[in-house]
Image 1 (cartoon, one colour):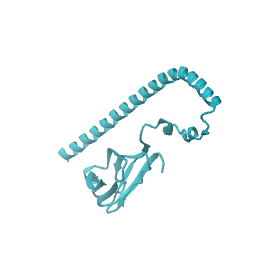
Image 2 (tube, rainbow, N blue to C red):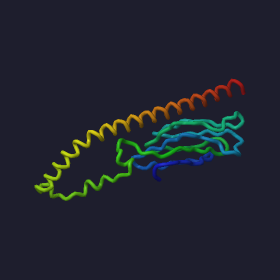
Image 3 (cartoon, rainbow, N blue to C red):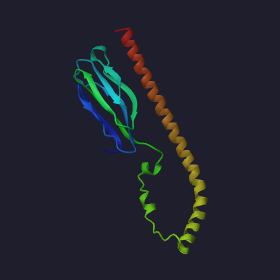
Length: 180
């Protein structure tokens, strides 16, 4: 399993233990009942020895789906109780600040250099590269700062949108409770 979409159907009484690749996180974003659901079902997450009810979906109360923002980097178990099943979706994403791995670059190429670092020619070559790179790095730093700012802005917009969706979901749940 690599980066990208994650989806699983958890039937009542079934335990699902998602496989989370090393240096990745599982982000669960949506819980939904299948089209033929007729009874309530709860999704429970077992994490670090404790159980937490994440949601109870009930077609009789018009609760067919729910947005979430749960992130797991350690093993967790998903269990459903009630009748039927619940669809759990989200995605696998890398964690950490390793931008090279996000860009698909392989850092092992840098490690494969010869061990003859003491050669005068290698030292002179590195000095020339360093001098030329220092000049170019100033431009790259400015571009990197712009890219980081754009990324941060996009992340902030996405978080605000997710918060609005969660607030709308909570409002719909409150309306359902107040006016059944």
